[in-house]
Image (cartoon, rainbow over all chains, first blue to last red):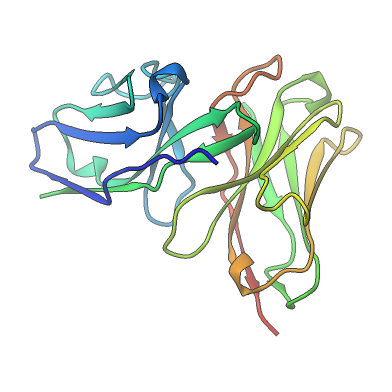
Length: 109
Length: 122
């Protein structure tokens, strides 16, 4: 089955840039989606199709995807960005299934 | 505005069947989209369970496929999850969600329900 690997945690000071990676075999050939989840809340889609933002998501959230790594970048980090972040893809191999990454806890210092 | 609301028992006994329903408002399920179930054990990550199209076509997580049934009731504008032979490992918050693409292509989950906690215990 397809595996997506994320760093368990990322720490960043307010106003700085946070980069969250999502590693997977040839992930650059897939569409990657990113979710933000705050404690006790449902996940919220923040980036879809590698780099597009849903309506209402700040421009500070951006994404890229190439080779074996996709990246979610949060610019000018705010305290309210502290949350868990998950990447997700569709695995169209024999499994035909959605796969979520292991998740990354972003801490704003 | 599309909204989803999960409902069902919060406590299920081991070996029994977990049953949840997701009521959809603001959109007619029969008009399109895939709809899915995702779960999250306490303190852990997200796990996709399965998805269903308005026509009844389904995809299931291979690791759960033998125990999962997802169905749709267009007359009630809702879809349901049944997970059989549950164990403590099935204890989780269960979310229902809508897939972004109208025509049924695999895509992001753009709208989520608030989630419902299900505990498996005797």
